[in-house]
Image (tube, rainbow, N blue to C red; front, top):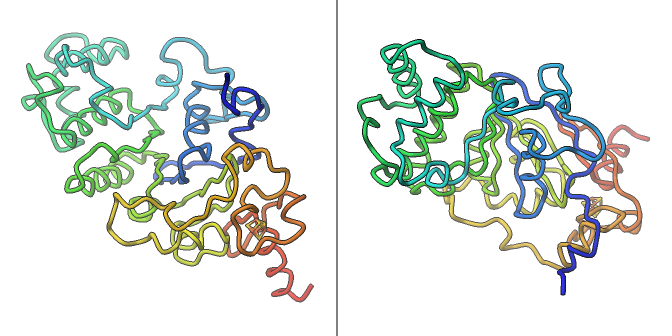
Length: 312
Ligand code: SF4
C-alpha cells in the first residue's frame, strides 16, 4: 500500500519568487519537508518547475542543457555530507585534476598544480595537504573545505550550500560559516545557504526566506525577519535564535495539529492549523504578500495590522 503522498498530488513549492545577488548570502530556511531542498534542486537544474521559470544571468533555466551545463553556467553545489561527495577509494586530488581537465583550466601538470593550489588556498588549505590522501584521512571539517575548494574550480558565481555544516563537528562549524563569508566578500559569490537551523542562518546570512509547506511565508534582511518577526510562524521560532546551539531543533515548541499532507493540501494559509492567531479567512484564502519595511510577509493578520497602521 502506498503512502498518503503516493496517492495525492502535493505542490512542493508554490508561488515562490526570489532573486539572489552576487556578494550576498541568501538563506533558505525551514523545517524538513518545507520545500527548500526542492527549490534548491530547481535552482541547480536538477528539477524543472511545472510552472514558472528559473532565470540565471538573464538565461532561462530550460535553455541550460547538457552535461555540466549548470556548472558551466556558474552554479555549483556544496553538498551536506562531504564524505558522500567523494569516492572513499579514490584519492581526493584526482577530483581536482579531473575538474581542471573538464574545464580546460591548464595545459600541463605544472599549471594544473598551480590552479589546484590556488583554489585550496581560498579555503585555507594547500595542494600539499591533499596530495596522495583519501577522503577518510580528513576530518569532516577539512573535507568540507576540500569539497568547497573543488566547487570553486569552475569559478562559479553562485554556490548552493545545502545544510553545509550539519555533518561537521560543532566546534568547526563557525570556521566553515566564516569561510562562506570570506568567499562572498573576496570572490563576490552569491551563496544560497539552505538550513533548518536558524542560529547558523542568523550568523551567516544577509537576507533570508522562511519556508513553510512549499510557501515562502516571509523574506527580507535577516535582522528584520528574525529579530523583529511579524509573521506568526517566525514569532514561534523566534526563541530559537540567536542562541549558539546549532544542534537545537526548532520544531520543539510547535504543535502539530495536522499531518504534513493536510498542511500541503490546505487551500488557505498552510500554517492555519498551527497558528494561535488564525482567523476564519485564514482557513479558506491563502494570503498574498504584504511588504513591511522592506520585508515581505504572507499573512492576513499582518496585512490587517498594516492597513490599521496606515489608517485604512
Ligand atoms: Fe496565522 Fe492567518 Fe497569518 Fe496564516 S494568515 S499565519 S493562519 S494569522
